[in-house]
Amino acid sequence: MADRHRTMTASEAEAYYDRFGKKQDSQGFYEDPALNAVIAHANFENAERIFEFGCGTGKVAARLLSEHLPAAATYFGCDVSPVMVGLAAQRLKKYSNRAKVLQTDGTVYFPLPDHSTDRVISSYVLDLLSEEDIRTFFAEAHRVLVPGGRICLASLTKGATLLSRIVSSVWMAAFRIRPAIVGGCRPVLMDNYIDWDRWKREHRNIVTPFGVPSEVLVLIAKGRH
Image 1 (cartoon, helix red, strand yellow):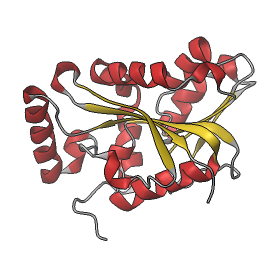
Image 2 (image 1 turned 180 degrees about the vertical axis):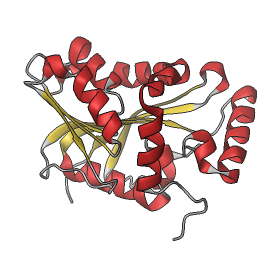
Image 3 (image 1 turned 45 degrees about the horizontal axis):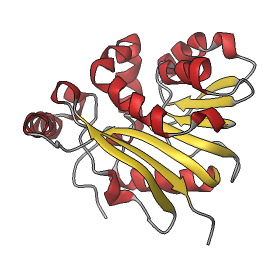
Image 4 (image 1 turned 90 degrees about the vertical axis):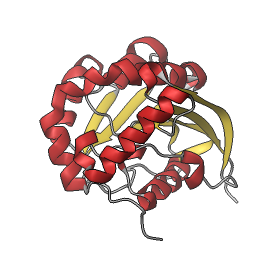
C-alpha cells in the first residue's frame, strides 16, 4: 500500500540531522516528559542488552547508562546521521567498554542476530519513517528481541486535548507543505502498524507538554509462532 504522505528519504534525513546536530537536545521541552514515562515503565533496571534505533546525540543512552541500567548491561545504538553518531560516541566515551554506536545507511534493518536483545528503544524516529518502514521496524524489533523482551517507544501523535489537537493539526499542515519544515516528523498512530499476534501492550499513554502530543508505548514481545 502506498504511503499517504511523502516522508523524507534516508539521504534527506541524514542531511537534515547532520545540520541540526546538537540542537536536537533543545527539543527536550516536549520530548523529556515522554522519555521519563518510557523509562518509568520499561523496567530497565533488569535489562541486560539494549538496542536503540536512532540514537541521536546519545542523550537517552547516557541517561540509561548512568542512572537506570545495571552495571553489566550493554548498549548498542545506530543512526543515519554521521554527525549524530559522532556526538553520541563522544557523549558515551566513558562507557566505551559497554556502549557502541554505528552509522547506518537508513535501511530499517537492525544489525543484530535473532533473539539477541531484551530492549529495543526508539524515540521520535517512527514519526520520520514511511508507513512501510514503520511496519518493518516492528517486524525487526520482534526478530531481535527475546520472548518477553520489550520495545520502548516515544513518538509524535494525534492530539488528546484541545490545545494538543490544535498543535497536531498545525504540525501536520506544515508537514504536508514540506516535511523539512518540521524535521520530517509528523503525528502517527502506532496502533495502526502493530501486529497484535506478536505483541502484548504493557503501557500506553499520551503526554502533552506545551501542547505537543507524544505517545508513550511499551510492548512485550510474544513468543514465536
